[in-house]
Image 1: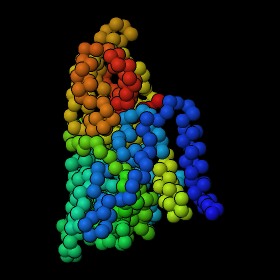
Image 2: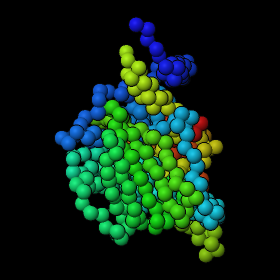
Image 3: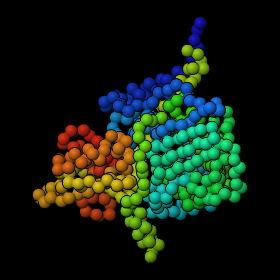
Image 4: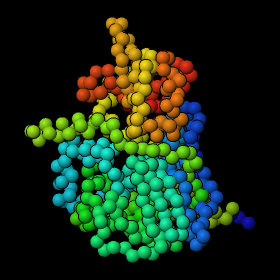
Length: 273
Length: 135
């Protein structure tokens, strides 16, 4: 029997091999490499995929920051060359507001500088630390290392309030679409930013997360940001990957941040105070 | 191998063919430190201050005139160091011993203060990444 291998398979494998070979020519062999897919994803008692695990925002299943010998293919949650993300299409007023921000204001808008919660969706899009998911048929608990934040997504079909309190992670309304968990969230605190470049959001922000686990070692999260007061049309992320780790989960607090004091002084100087 | 299996391999391979992403620091490095003013430091580790989110370590470093100054160096977030295998214990074991650091000095003119990029303890000679590498 003749085996027909689709051309895209060959292209993908060739690019994988050539990238790896080219990258290794100049230095010692990488000690941190991409994690293999692993076996099939585990299932919950109700037959749906089980997203439980200690997930790292890279392809290695372990820490890649602060280390030498990391295969570039193991870094990051997506490769913009393979799955590009379009820039957000801001409405003219929003674009003008972002453009008018000074460099100091932009710095102060960063969660890593002002120590505010990242909030949804930045907790997925702008989070270099790990996340533990504990998943049952009735609930998905997300335990974020960053700022020790946590979030519960109830899967028991409970009613969702029409006018919820403004939480940093919003109020979630989940549903299954086959093996993908689709979580629509709304009702957000307005003080967070979607990304570190000044992308603010309105009270009408709606975030849709699509969770899937194509294999044991990989969690895929795709995010759609809809905000009719800020964006001309919804923005969609690449399918971003997290990989399964078995290392420890640590605490992380934002406390001894002296930079914010310096920046506040600079902001006052800008304002002529 | 079935076509379906090959497709699955291709899909996962496509996911793992990812290029380098910028490394993360707790702060914006560029705001606090000058990436164009990085240099090598060699001295003696005197103490450490490990606290969330950042670590700081201190070294006695002799300037060209022979005067010894105590420098402080900021590191990555503690959890980043720990996950990369660089623990507090390792630093404690090297207090009083020689250390080499590549670091970038502070922008605000604060004296004897820098961000650590890479580091080697004389005791084991292993190159460790302590913060964003600027050069």
